[in-house]
Amino acid sequence: EAYLGERDAVIDRALTDYLRELLADRGINRSELSRRSGVNITFVYDIFKGKSMPGRDNAIMLALGLSCDVRETQRLLRLAGVSELWPKRRRDAIILWCIEHGMTRVACDDELYRLGERPLFDPKDDADGGRA
Image (tube, one colour):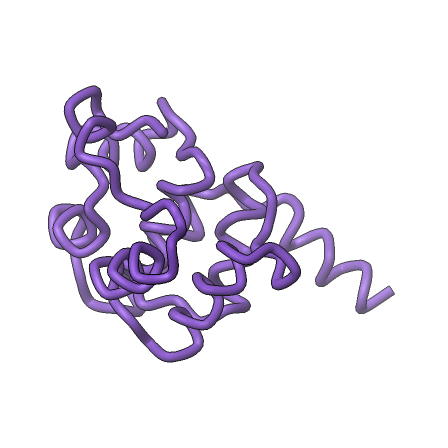
């Protein structure tokens, strides 16, 4: 029963509540999160208002901007309703490695590019509010 009680707490949790908790733990605000993650500031505010949900890459970018560890990142992805990082996928494995090594979003994108994978940040997406 104790285990099921814990599972329910995670399942019923809202993404916005989890993001607010992570912001408070890190001592940063939403505009700083936008700067660190590369996610458009308007889109970040819409996510926090519950008006929008981030796509998978934006959720990963938010996790990197929050300096999340692997467990926190997987939880953020799950709460965003997107697939978790899977180490058997080459791109996901690179991202997981970057997270485990405490890299920033920019450093992670550099690593993805260096290894021939699509970076997380796409300037074209930022022009339309970063809704990828």
